[in-house]
Amino acid sequence: MPHSDTAHDDPLVSILGEPRKGAVLRDKAVKNLNERSPIYDRLARNEADQLRGYLLSRFADLGLAQEALPFIREELELGDSAYCAGGAARALAGLKEPPDWAAEALLCAAHRFMNADDTVVFSAKASERKGDATTTLTEIFVAIGRLGRDAGGILGALNMMAEHPMTQGASVALDAARVQIASHVPTCCGGTVQSQSDAALPSRPLDDPARLADTLMEDHQGRKARLGEVFDADVNLIAFFYTRCMNPAKCSATIETLSKLQHDLGDLAPRCRLGAISYEPAYDTPRRLSVYGGNRGIGPESAIRLLRPVDGIDPLKELLDLGVGFGETTINRHRSEVFLFDRNMQNVASIVRRKFTRDEALDLIRMELGKG
Image (tube, rainbow, N blue to C red; front, side, top):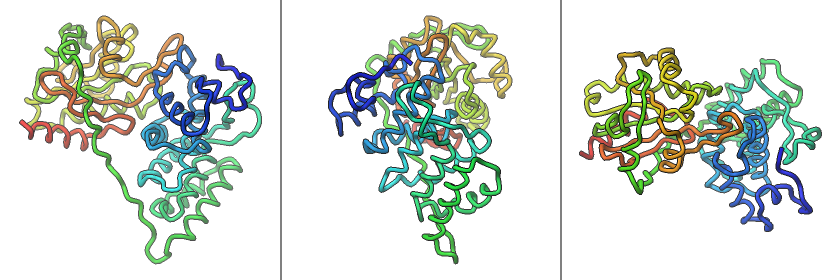
């Protein structure tokens, strides 16, 4: 990896270029969780994952800022990187007052990596990733154990997991977690975990919605139009994806959810437009978009438009502050992101860094239509 050590004692100082430590270094670390941070530029996917996993793991000793929690949650609920999930779990384990979604997010990650556990070594330098090994599941189970009674609601699921084969380290961590949780949960009634369905993020008003509306697009049928012409309804929901995405919990799930959401709109359909834009327009030709959509319920007759920006993704990346980073040949990191716009292409709500669901989308659409 291109990030080498210097005379600084802390390799994180070298990576972030921040000579000071403590809160200043932590804040700089939070900013560099953004997929567009220069520290990920031109890195291969696995290199970017390893660096990001190390960065996440360091919040265990730097202190986990509230601003980092959405990144932690996304890695646990949707991520497919063993390094990032393990780093996120380690960061969460260091919190004295974890968020109320912690147990469910960690359980989600445990299920996902149950048959894909991997050995990880959190280090800034690839040459040092040999000692102090742990595994993704080990870190997840340690974090669950730290929750104590707050993980009471998932104790039954953990007991079932104990029947599955896993590494010795993960098994020991899981057994310890079950003991820690059971010691805090009354045997008569079990524990509960509050489930939090976060409100959509406040909209970030666009400085130039007219420029966004004027962006030339091409859809999966080869039809070209300006973005404002495609999305001309009272409420317009636009997701971002790319067909080479290897994480089924992100892009593939997003497109499938769009297809189901279109069906669920019912009487709201005439006042709504749904669509998705590719991060990778040079690769995602109309044919590729058509095949990808067709395999996920979006055929030639669908009202949903899968689009590629004709002049590249960079203008949209800047206008919407998209969470996507690029390696030498393709995307190395991206967040889950869905935006709602009014008919003037002004951003009114966003769903980012967590699972995009039909129920939340319908609630947001109804709320926006109700304002009219």
